[in-house]
Image (tube, rainbow, N blue to C red; front, side, top):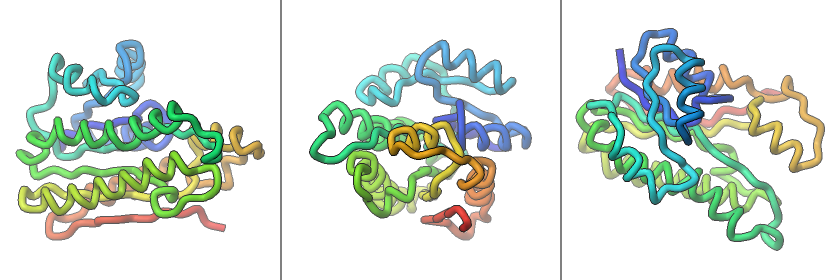
Length: 229
């Protein structure tokens, strides 16, 4: 049985991964943005532990985690949470840029830094759930894509830095997935949302578990998952 810390467990891909790992009897620690959300997660997933920390405020993560119990070792750190605000470069405000960069890039970097000792001890695995926007930037996606391009750079650098410590690093790039975030994206795009057109969160969860379960003699560095059709 492994020990895993998951962000974004409340919905979409994060919830699907949490359900799958819980069903296997793994020890799960879920990051929640506040105490109310932590209570909701604990009630939804019996037996999990929760940690409170706001990914929208990376400067306070060190303080927040320093005042809570944390696992002694981590077999994986799964960065699944994310936020998106579409807009053209000529319209995006610093607030929109900073919100996405904080939650999608700076907080994953800080959370990884704070938990590296536990990951090194277990020779664990850091998984970044990125996006197709981490490989290309389309119109109105500048801020989100910039945060995800940065997340790819973070993962690539971390992989080189931690290879000698036995820590594996993987980036997963899902295409459009039927999640609450995708509903919001469609609203911002002014398009009708049809969940059946997109990847099921459970399918992406399967790819993440495949990454985690890979034998120790190999490492999946980057994995793209696209909707069919």
